[in-house]
Length: 115
Length: 113
Image 1 (spheres, rainbow over the protein chains, first blue to last red):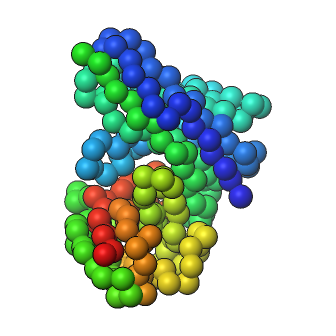
Image 2: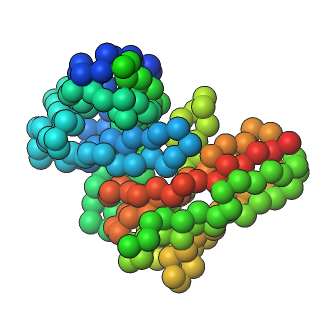
């Protein structure tokens, strides 16, 4: 089955700096890679996702890059703000129309933005 | 549009008891998946239901079971509770399946004493 590794487990950056979180996956058939943000006591929320036919996707201060050959993908947050402090999870799965593949999550990165 | 709703939000149970958790998906979503979240193990997949059928199952013992009703609402049951079952149980709904754009509920915090 799929295995997703995520690094680092904790990350502290100064407000305004950039943060990068990296994930690797094992199943070359995986084609859907979402990122979730979970604030303390709250539900995981999808912040950005990427499909395997795309190498990079941006949404304002957040971007995700995917290297299918190396089987790794990364989350980039620029101009970090205190509200970016949270736990971030990457995940991988096979996206099929009416498919039944599960999301396999990384172990999470606790991001702390230092004011 | 209402989000995914889980009830109850908090539960305290005694070892050996059983518990039932409920999840109401986003209107129109046909897939409901369940995850266990613990500090040590992260987010672990339990099972996924689509149109009342279990399509995918994670590596959990048979004490963990679920079902889905015709209105797509889902329940998860844990029998003979163990201390190690204490966790946040999250359900997620999506239109097509567990792999696509899953939206999570707030979770049910289960504490087994």
